[in-house]
Length: 332
Ligand code: AQP
Image (cartoon, rainbow, N blue to C red; front, side):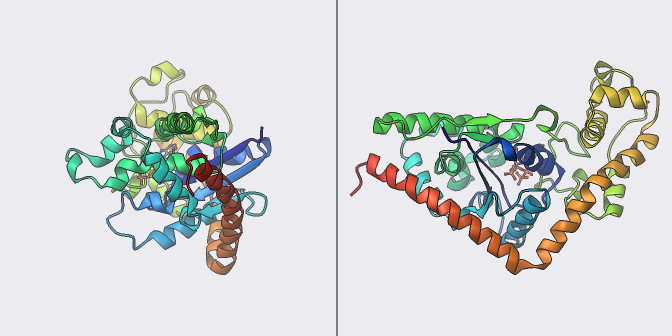
């Protein structure tokens, strides 16, 4: 069986370190292990939580630049914009017709994002997971690398695939597997270690943006919440020091070592001594990515050509599969 990965990011704001470590970097690490690789910028999903669409174009191109700058070759892989492949929304409609509302009501992201007044929440936000299932299954993707927060949606995509197969009496879709890298599954906010780093957090100081310059990275790490205790020598001694654990874990990721190793290295030291070290390894890693992103963004015509190339390949696959779906549904 052909192995195929599909994943994507919503162009909802500043792409950040959580998206980079939790998603893009884990995609890059598996590029040569799968037959076909599709990376989408999911602009239609972005509309489910945006007050307006004024930054959609800019954010979409920035995410495309981030994918390429992080090491996803746009010639060997398919990088494309969701709305350039109409099959996604067509398949999502068929899925809406076989997905019980109870399944969608259980999604924790809907509960979090809809807030208390669920009747005022938009229909798009409610049916978002059916569109995400379509994003994955339109390509018959077998694996979906995501951060921890998206695991429930990928599991729902499996349920929807199975429900559709049962409905038409044919195994049209494979059941996609989520792939979650443990060390980077959940990068936390720099202001509150109990919340994940997120584009929609109102504070810019809660996250590192991939386009932040070195001075801004230094300032954000300097201002990152910590505590006045020295760094302990063992993981269980970190206890409820969530912000401390987040920063120490980031250092471990950037220096390709374990959290325990970092604790041994810095045992007894204060965060005032640790933070400049973290800043330095972060800047060493992120500044080449940022510089390449800026170069790509300065040449929009080339970036758009890459996206067209990706969309052409994605449409070829999607068209073949949607034809099979229509036939299975006995459409004329
Ligand atoms: N903090 C995070 N740690 C690890 N992975 C993360 N991801 C997002 N935040 C973290 C992963 O990034 C991919 C793309 O996410 P998305 O933009 O499609 O949606 P999201 O998860 O809702 O991301 P944000 O940044 O929190 O956006 P907003 O604030 O707009 O909702 C996914 O694989 C996700 O797991």
